[in-house]
Length: 193
Image (cartoon, rainbow, N blue to C red; front, side):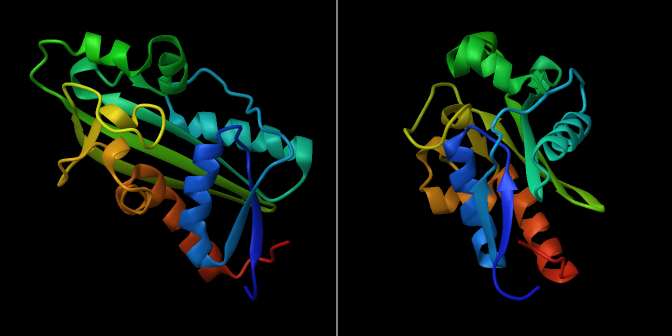
């Protein structure tokens, strides 16, 4: 691959676009918002199935090389809830609702997972990132988005929302998935726009 490679991220979330774009930039990938921002999501317990279905549907609509990602917060004491339903749960009860569910719970282990799907026909590639840690007792920090104010990754004392942007982008589940994607694009020498 020579020069800059342009890919499109299917999302309406500007924070996600900013994070993923910063992760992919060192790999020579310019990430732009796709002409469609809404993903068609199926009901499934599998982030891979959800992201693959949404990516295939988006590609059918825009016919451009694209990435779709899906993330979830899997809380051990809640048997993996909210998991693949994290976005919906966040919209309905937010992190304050999750903290309410966790009141008095000693086991606060949780993992954030991201599945990023690249479609650049004939290629379909899946990249998975996971960062584990704990749910804090109270929300902390003003950065990030979603459940970031209540998630403390292993080896850290700050929540994602307390971390500077660059620090979060070195340890996050999204970083792990998108850096694998960037490395694969660089090594594969696929033809980009």
